[in-house]
Structures are given as C-alpha cells and as structure tokens.
Image 1: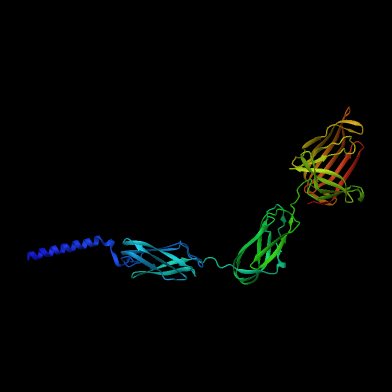
Image 2: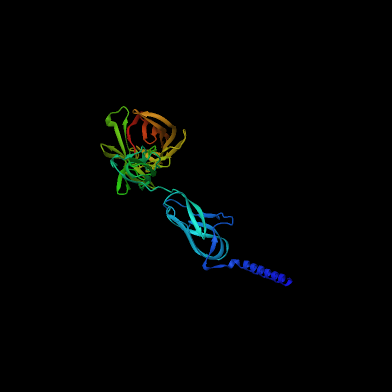
Length: 443
C-alpha cells in the first residue's frame, strides 16, 4: 500500500512537471497548417478595441493612409488573412505573419471608394470570432454644376468706375446670364487684362436660367482707349464683355497731361479776345529738366509756347525769350507756385542783369507771396473749389535808379483745373488787364 501511494505521488509530480514545461513553451506553439490562431475578443467575450486611421470622404478613393487597426489575442503564431465585408463600395483587408502570442495589433488596409456618407459598419472575422467596427464617412463636396452662358448682349457691369492706378472694389462687378443644367457648386475665373481680373463662386440650387455675378480684383494699369475685352468660358459656351478705364482725377494746380486745354477771355473784351491753350504731346528739355509744351493757338494754329514742369507740389515755368522788351533772352526757370507753401509764405526768383529799352538793368526779380489757400471761387458762372491765390511783383533794378516795381499780378489756381483768373496791374503806365477762364478740358 505504501508502495502504491509513493508511485502515485511520483506519477502526479511527473505530470505536474510536464504540464509546467508545456506551459513554459506555449508562446512558440505553431499550428500544423502554419496559420495563426486567435480571437478578436477578450476573455470576457467582448470585442477588443479597434482604431480607424485616415479620413474618409464620399466619392473619394481611399489612400494608403486609410487603415483599420484591430486587436487580436493570438494563441498560436503563424500566417493570417483578415478581411472585412465590402460595404458602400469599400472594404479592409490584411495578410502577414504573427510571430508572438498574446494581444497583437494588426493593420488592415482600406481599398475602394465610399459611395455614401455617415457611419458605415463593417464586420471583421478572425477564426471563430466576429466583431463590428464603424467608419465615419463625410459627405464631401457635391459634383460641380454644369451650365452655359446665354444672352451675352444682356451682360451688365456694376456701378464702379475703372480708373487707371486705382484698386477696384466691390462695386466693380459684371453680371452674366447662364442656363444651369446640373445644379451644384461653381467657380469662374477670368484671367487678368490690363491689371484687372474677375472671379465668382457659389452654388446653383436649381436648373434653368439665372444670373451669376463676378467681382473684379486688381488695379487698371493704363487708361482707355481702347476698351479692354474679357472672355469668360464654361464648356463650349462663352461670353465677352468690355470695360473702359478712365484717367485718374487730375489734382494738379497746373495740369500737364497731354491734350488738356483751356480757353480764357479778356474781361470786358470781345470774343476775339479769347486765348486757347493746349498741352502738347511733346516736351522740350532745358538743362537737366524736361518741360511740357503749352501751345497758345489762334484758330488752331500755334502762335506761341510756354514751358512748364512739375516737381512734387512745386510748379516751374521756363522763360527762353526776351519778353518782348529785353535785349537779351532770360533762359531760366522760376517757381510759379509752391502748393505746399503756407498763407503768407514768400519766394523770390532773380533773372540777373539785362537791358530794357536802352536802360541797363542789374537784375530782374519776381517776388511771390501766397495770399490764400482752399478757397471757393466763382469765375464765368463756374464754381471752383480748392483755389490758391498768389501775388507776384515784377521788379527791375535800374543802374543808378534802384528797384523799380514794373507790374503786379495775381493768379488764381484751381486744383485739377489750372489758372482760372489772372489780374495784371501795369505800374509804369497804370492799367489793369483781367483774364478769366471760360472753358476747360482736363485729362
């Protein structure tokens, strides 16, 4: 009996040792067919967690970043193939080899194109275990609209005025007529011409005729003429429209833009006492400076010229003659107006020695003084704003007699217009001559 008990005890001990040895080598178990064995569930019977990587959008094909991670508790290592079912046009699958038992993370690659949005539920099977995982698919953008342009003659421009050098704003638009055959989002871009482009976007919600508004951007570079033409296209249809670009408002007190012109008349005179002045397209250079040529015309024929230039807010005139009374020409410029000067400010121009009607002169001088700024004046029934008044005293220094004031003049300059009134008082033979501007055309 004791021998039996001893044998039984030894046998149990041997079985226990063998059992422990088998447990120690459990991680290296390989199935006979080489396939991994495991479950997608925990010991409590609940599905192990899963993770969805990447973004999913309706009608957008899946990429390499679209991955489903599943957790599997492996009891035997080996190869595996895990697939989901195909739902709404896409699915997940993965193959490989598992080299360790226990919980493993397995990557399943996505493929296909989601055909619907919202939560999509997939069924994953591994061994005898079955689990479900949700993938959220966003709606994405609807397909672009299909439309054509119609009634191009009915294309209209917004109220904005296009001015060279000035940036356009929300008032610079064009309204086009379209026929929508497929509702949806649209984007229309019209390439830039002369520095200005047009664009518009939105969504057509119904089929049929409607209108689309494009808004301009940029700044026109060059003024018209000519008008600047644009063509907008959708599929095989297109429409063209044109914009006209104006010159920027002239803010000069002595405008020097080509073709600007003035008419002035002797106050108390007759229509024959009218002077017409036009800015030529040509310039003339004296010394280092270029001057615009102001042509004085009679019945369209130039009879005399005046040379003007501008530097900042200062306006200069070049005298290249003898003024009709001097022996020698002056050939020198003088400052006619400093628009930045303050009321009461003065400046002087000296022309040096000369001879007038046989009298030797040691100097001829012009003394100018700013009398007023920012005035409103009415001349020949026209009201002008931002008027500057300047007084000039013309003095000749006669050798042996000293300074002799020859004349006084007062000129009125209107911003963007030029001289609107000139009053000259002859101090040698007292008389007053007044000229007023009767018409202007400034470019």
